[in-house]
Length: 354
Image (cartoon, rainbow, N blue to C red; front, side, top):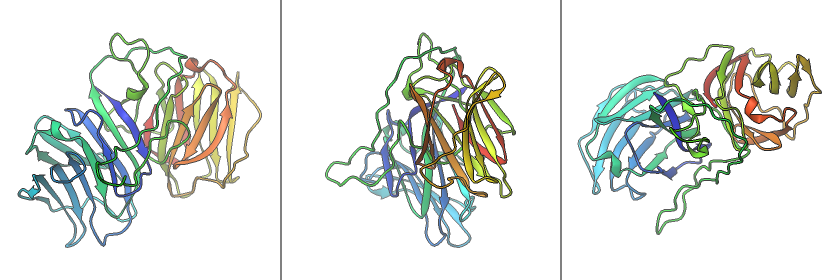
């Protein structure tokens, strides 16, 4: 089994956040929310609902921080709440990043927090009626993604075809002003996160659909150094996402996009030099370093990060935590031959998407 993206991720969306779930809920769909609790004075909520009116909420997930902390789950139909289900446990901590996943199963929603099973919520209404995700509360969101289990075989992909991916905006509710929400940036913008993917094609498909790109292995572990294959290699519009936490005593780490024994792109934050070095290594020889940045060092010891590398026809565009960092013009031009990723150094890796 594998995961495939069904729509582009939303990076650092503002709250309250609402967006249409493309195609609605389907069995095997997983929605992943990464963020940080800002304070415990209130509560936050994730709703899987029909439309933007909040009259019909199939699954209301509501951590409340009073009385030691507990989580309320419920369903609202035609404006009326059903009986509450309470989990007398609080898996979220103030200031600590979390990963919250909702997996749609035939019988109910399976919820995991930080890759640990938390609860199962049985369907009270048909889940295929759900077409909207809504999140609100004292959170700082870094990443919201939609992925679906597939059982199709992995096939090699070799393509230099240029794909285009439109920026995705949440649907504007009728009769309402558009709520501030995150955009998915097809070119230069990322933020911080974690999981494991590789590109594949559906049966009979010659080239990958960029709207349904990566393949992810559920509940991954991330040994360091970490290596994975980029199935089919790179092509224009292909993106790589790496997120994690910089160790408190970190000196440096690197992200390498490799072509055989060559390193097409070496991204190397160095805390001992307060620099982000970029380079290429061909036949064991390094080229000239690039160090200039239009902003200050975007990585900090002890803090989370998300690196988004977007491959374009002439360069890599790199963003860190949603802010454009740099462009790096290709020194190796055979993009499909750039087919492996290496991450190593003084970080704890939390999410990899290729």
